[in-house]
Structures are given as structure tokens and as C-alpha cells.
Image 1: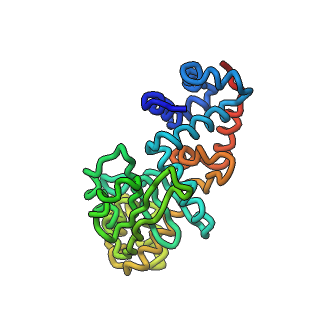
Image 2: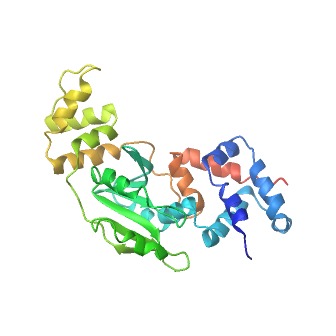
Image 3: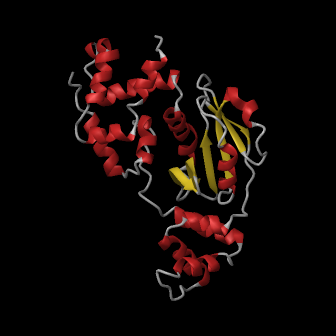
Length: 285
């Protein structure tokens, strides 16, 4: 079956933060509207739940409309989930560095940034983004549609390239490996760290925390962190970031369509399971 772009864009709005907030209130108005508008025949032939319908919509989008949510979610499922088996690996969605926000960040033995550029994206902001990411992260990868390789190969050879082609069995392929950079910028690091995190780094490295006030703590800790050897500072930084937020609530099997939502909304397992239970409500249409 063929789908026009307007319908696909309309479908894609179902996978958003606002939609999840509506579901939590048992408000399925938007889903009901999509069924009425596009899929009345599907509804009549299926005794289904809202979860079943969302899985159906996701499958349509995955085949026909690789917007940012699909791109990011498919990469999570096909690439990053396999790395979560490593001890204390951490994935964070929309990681802010200066004025740039990276799509995905992963922390295990090294810190890695994954910047997604779909076929709908421009590369105008990419030079500034890469400059910011290099200050803090050990490896940088750009994830791009396979047809866009020629546009992104011109960027720094130290930046890795991962290509995406939904028509291949292995949708994501490593086109160019990223170099490892351990020369992180302490000042850029300080702009990322929370107060308790930079204090913890100082304490862990020096064995003590000096007398601090709310007025001088940033300056003193910043000066001390600047004295820590870069390789050691990199390890301490990664260890601190791994402690952020809830543990991994990603689904490796039954609910993979929603992994990016689980991640973006920082859901723990209890919150994830509650959302899924609500979506198992029988379609009311």
C-alpha cells in the first residue's frame, strides 16, 4: 500500500512527548482520529489495542518515512542495545554541550556522541556542533542516509560515519571509524557537570574537598579540575555521568518501537510498564 507524505507526517506525531502525556491520562483522542481518518478498515478487521495500532503505525513509518524519531529509535535498537551489555553502560538522549544538543550520547569505556542527520536535515550547523562535541567526547559519529555520504565525507576524518539504508537487512553500517580523542577540555566539562558531580570529581581525585561556599565553589573546583591529568579526568567524568538518572528501561524485544520515548522521557522500568499497560486498552472507536 502507498502512503502520501501528509499521512506519514500525521502518523509520526503519535510518537511524541505530548502524546505520552495524553496516554497517561487515558486520552487517546489523537490515535482515534488517525484510525477514523486513515485506518477504519484496519480497525474493523482487528480486535486490537492501542498498543497494536501504534506498532502497526510504527511499521509503516519504518518502511516509508525515516524521520528523526524512526532514525533514532532504529539506531538504538539495531546498534546501541548490543553495547548495553557492557558493564554500567549509559545512554542519554539529547545531551547538551554548550549551545549544541547531541541526539544520543553513550558512556561505557569511552564517551561517544551520535549526531543524526536525516534526509530532511541540513548540515549548516554541523561544524559548530562538531567543534563543541570535540571538547568533551572521546568519539564522534554522524549517522546519515546512505545516499548522503558524499556530503558528509568532507568533514574531519576523525569523525566517524554510520550509514542508514532501511532497504538493507543490516540497516546501519559503519562507513568510517571515529578516532579516539582523550584531550578533553576541563572548562567545557565544567559547563556540563552538575555541582555535586564536579565536587565528587575533586574529592575522588584529590582525596578531599576544600572548604567551599556557594560563591566560590565553582571557581575553586574548576581550578582543581584543571590540574587533573586529562586521561584521569576523562575516566572520572564518564564515571559521574553514568550515575545520572534512572537505570536502563529500554526494551530489547516486545516494545522496541517506543525505546526512544522511554529514553527521552527518562522513564524507569515501573513508568515504562505503566505506559504499556495503559496502551493495552482495547480500541474504543
